[in-house]
Length: 338
Image (cartoon, rainbow, N blue to C red; front, side):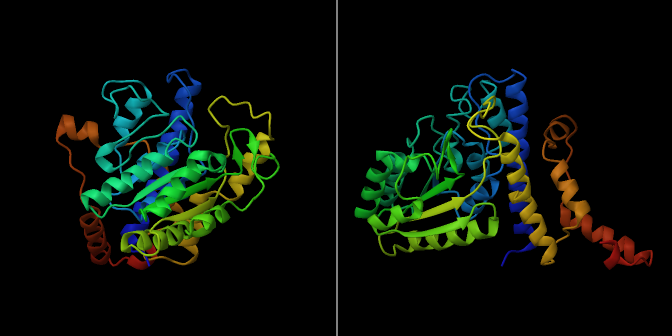
């Protein structure tokens, strides 16, 4: 289904998101970043699986927890981190910060500090794409809590009635800020995907900690939206975890933090991806060692070396070709070495 290069790309995206947000968490705890920071750790497979089905011309609208969506859509990391630090070199000139980060160049229309604030923007983007005949589709990410907002129902009704190519992606991490999804008493229907039925949408419930499940569900909905099938819109509920607090510094008095972290560690989306690739022996150099190397290099880039010394890394294909030739010339067992 996926080529070796595609699998490595998706794995790298998830690792980038994880490393970026762990660094953002550290910086906020150290007082280097001001304002609220909502990290996306634990939910990386959702953004990666969804955005893997999108094209650059497509639009996404995010939540207050928007770093992962932004990275998965293709934004550069340096301007993003500069934005968190309030620098003029940031992707929004330092004026948006964490909760309002955006990058129009890749179709990321912005994170949103208002719960449920992105629904109307996503519908508007889809309407604009139709008028401009670009063939683009629009995706709005939101949490289980935001599904209770009136803006969701208004946007869903309008998208369905006007047959707009909008996909509603619910990241159901089981807790809306500090209110548990199942025991908080904030909704009568626990199966959030059923809300799509009232608007004639196709809907799927997937394991949000499994990249492959997210991708499959999203791919079906994206194909339907692009082909103009039915009313064009769809609903994808991704059931996932939020191992840390609502914001960095949240004491989590509403739940047991150790239990939440343990649950995540037992069902970590990145480790799930690694295990599946190793188990199914995908056609790539996924070994325990290669996974460790990929996971440890998330904070490093060649930018400084390129700028100062005109350094250019060799293409991986060229490196592997030379390595294989060397192994053969030295009569090594290339298969076991790789």
